[in-house]
Each structure stands twice: as structure tokens, then as C-alpha cells.
Amino acid sequence: MTISLIYLYLHYKNIIMKTTFGPQKIMFPCPATLVVTGTMEDANIVTIAWVSLLTSLPPSLGISVGQRGFSGEAIKKNRNFTVNIATVDIMKEADFCGITSGKDLDKFKESGLTKMPSKHIESPIIKECPLNLECKLVDWQIVGRTNHFIGEILETHIDTDKLKDVNKYGSIDIEVFNPLIYIGGVREYRKVGEKVGDPYSIGNQLKK
Image 1 (cartoon, rainbow, N blue to C red):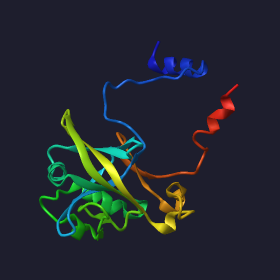
Image 2 (cartoon, rainbow, N blue to C red):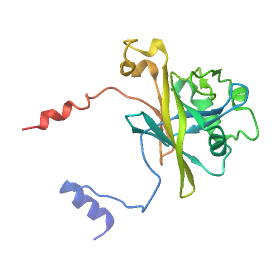
Image 3 (cartoon, rainbow, N blue to C red):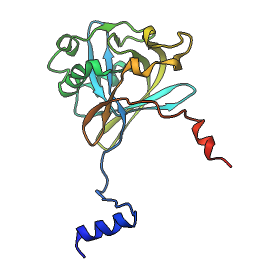
Image 4 (cartoon, helix red, strand yellow):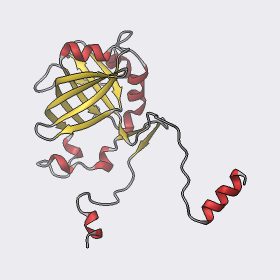
């Protein structure tokens, strides 16, 4: 039986086909973040999509940074960094910071992005990013060929005009925020679509 006939048969029987590729680095969606380490006088930016929240108490996150670049060593040296969530409006600048090296140029100067002082650490935040997280490095390990950094979140900055309620950090208006999304493996930038449900709630409809 030819592949086309097998496909038609499976389609007729409503059987889903799967194609295997072995172990691959594909995961999505991922936030496009700009990680900054250094000082107001001398800071570097690296674009990182491999970032995730790790714990609630204390709030912490993890980022993965390659060993060959400049940024991993800078984070180890400075022991702090900021994670700044990029928007669709600064897609070109975000991509630029991911395809250039801080060894060769000043990414803030070349990209036109603006440094702002953090509240608790030396590493600055980025004005053009509506959400900024100040992090203290608490641990790091090398897994494979990648540095994995764990940062305790010391402060959260959110643009006031992106909040529906200025007293609630979880009231971000995502449509106004317009975060830049990276599709890992496919290598595409996307933007967020419409809301489709409420977590911790919609699943109750299946309870008996």
C-alpha cells in the first residue's frame, strides 16, 4: 500500500498520523525577553526565549544562556540581571540583540533602547519593555552546552497604562501590552490572539 493510500485510509478512519523526529529543541509559545546584566554605565542585552517561572515562594525564574556568548559570563560576574518582556513594537530591536555580541558593540546604543535604573540591583531595566523583573542570581548549572541560571525575583515593574487595575499586578491588558512571542523550533515571531477561556475554571465544566 502506498503512502498516499495509507494517508487516505487513516483520514477516512479519522486516525491521526504522527511523524517522529527524535529529540529536538522545539517548544512554543515562548516569551521573547531581553535579559540585561551590568550597570547603568556598562550594561549588555541578550535576547532569550528559554525562560520560565520556577517557584512561587520566593518568586523565581530560570533562563538558559549559551556558554559561547558574552552574556553568560557577565551574569556569573555580576550575580544579578533583569528580564524584560519585549513587545511586537520592538521586534527588530529584540532580534538585533539576539544576533549580535556585546563583545563587539554597545547594544543599547545601537538598538536605541533606553536604560532605566532598577530598584534593588545594579543591572538596569529597559524602558521600552512594559514588564521588567529584577533578579538576583541564586544558582546556576551547566546542562549540556548551556548555562541554566536561577534568579530570585526581587522587584516587578509594569507600565501603569498597561494595567486595568493599578493595584493588581495580574490585571495586565494583554491586547494593549502586545507581547512578542517566539515559536521555538519553527523560528517565527508571533503575537497573542484572542482570549479563549479562564484557567482554573473552564475545566470545571468536565467535572461530574
